[in-house]
Image 1 (tube, helix red, strand yellow):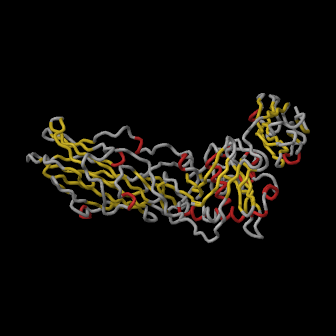
Image 2 (cartoon, rainbow, N blue to C red; image 1 turned 60 degrees about the vertical axis):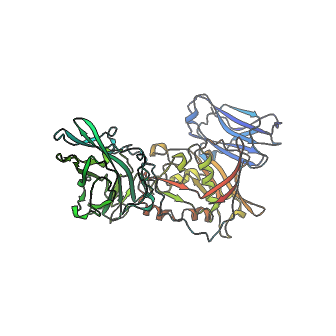
Length: 564
């Protein structure tokens, strides 16, 4: 059924606000998109509805609006915009529901922005904060093969004359009275707190463990020694990386005369090759008796073949540690079979990806650590405020670390060579100019620009179709939260478009802001991609660099923003 023209109420509503619904019958709409126009107290709002998703006798909300003295009405007349003059647009009824929808007499979104500081230095996008959060690339498996082991258990050596030594599993906390403070020879400062967790940046992974060794006699535990292990892996070369292992005893009971450590072997998937250090390379003697608490450490390396261009590899470097225990009763010493790092409390933070794609010479990253791109909010508050608004209020919280909802990088060309995602969100020619405020520009040469969020170069973009892997597909930017920057009494604000309050079910945003601020906010992103070696579907976070003092209504939000 095709219905053209305008549907309206008989007159204004006393509440001055109303929500509008249209009914999509089960008639087999031939056109996917229907664009409705609502004439509000603050201008005309255009709302796009996906008919295919609602063609089962559904009432679909077009949103609530403030009309003041206007008569609520909805029109479907812009045939040329969607090219549907000869196709059916299926709707057969409209409903207007007056009420109080918490729409202020003015903007329902009002973010008061700080004045831009053109000399504020750019954030350091290279030095990333170590974290223990495992954030995998989009679509990757949840666990690597080595870390998919069952619950860690003790690793026991052979029984010799009724005696046996078992290692692990690692303890979840330090034994009572055990020293937990610094500092091993090779660890980075952030790992020196000895928290019993695995943490990483894009190029360094470090983990502290307290591992017990049990002496068993005729199947019964006779004595327990505990050691603090620290293993740090640094991706410090083009085709190589380095492991630093530090061992310190926390307690050795008198039942042991001597405990001696050694590296049994390292492991790494082809074409990665461990280079075993000579036993003489230990710093500090790797042997201890009761009461001895000195540290011993050793550095080993790994090489991988970076000679083939366009290749990507994943490695999980591993180490097996042997020990010889001499009981104090003079009986024969007892050997362990090798404590294997990856099989005790496994983590995927130490999963390494090496490639000759990002750079021909090659390089590596800890692929399950998601780096953070930080806006220069003091210099570009308009772009930062738009992203902040969506991160805080949209249900998918794009790129917000505290919500564990990363952005997933989409390299150029994946969404067609003409930047198709941006074309979907910023779909109307001249939208930014028609909805922007020239007074909010940076300079006389600045122009309003359509800023889309999540970024078009992400799988989170509303413009990326589900068939291409899009996580939040929409058919038009009018389905997104729509805002614009405006200057009022010398202060820049970010307002919502027209008299429409966002439902906060929208999964995307478009905003008419300063073009210079929009492009400037992303000026470091190319370097960020290269430095963090981002490839297709890699996860990353966005730190908007803003905070807000806010008053929230049911549908409205008013904040005074501050650059962090």
